[in-house]
Length: 196
Image (cartoon, rainbow, N blue to C red; front, side, top):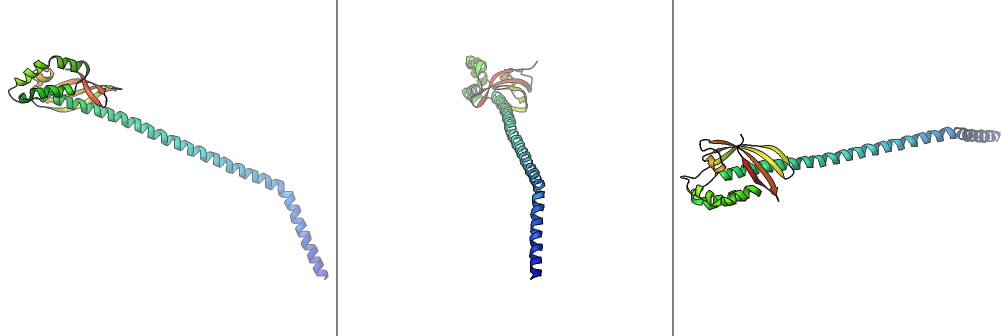
């Protein structure tokens, strides 16, 4: 029995020593736990900051790309409208003089449209007097500038009758400075000018 008592006493003594060791190490363990929790909190805050920065950057990139794409689309639309308008102005059939005048009025706005409307009878007579249909094709069109709803485009075209846009009759290749205004969802010609 004495061995049993000794074993029990040794066990109790070991348990007591473990408890005392735990009590002695409690402050160190608490401090280590606080440091770990602080590290985990700091890591969480840093991860949240990185995720927020990535989300803000991604949102900025999407908005920026959308705005840039909108500008590119507007630039392309104005350049295309200028090319189509010049082609329309250079393409006239004596058998359809009224149609020609209506088509060039349809692609015009502002002072340009008013001026063309005032000289409508002379335009009709000039197209009717053609001996054959006039044709024109745009060789190149380049955007010079675009600010909001106004654009300047330079167009180079090959024309069988360049007088239709005010160029000399002996010029088959013409360069035209085209001023455009956006009206609704369309770009219309507000003015044309031969560069000097």
